[in-house]
Image (cartoon, rainbow, N blue to C red; front, side, top):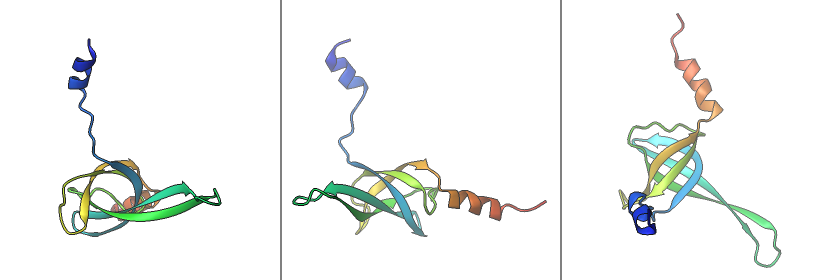
Length: 106
């Protein structure tokens, strides 16, 4: 198999992906994801943490508060939404507790 055939079989997406934590699910089909970035300070070389929020489209409203999710860049969907929920990497323990609380006791 040549290099060109391998490239044709697996299309590589150039869209940006980020992994972050869901901080809000109060909107319909929209989640707010906080992504933490760690960068060395230019002068002091100490690691500085900064957090940025991204609005992402969640079609099935499957993500819950505290989940770790992967979001992918997409076309503008609204004034602030430019990201799409790709997958839920890890469910939060808080979400698991809520599931057991809502189940009917028989």
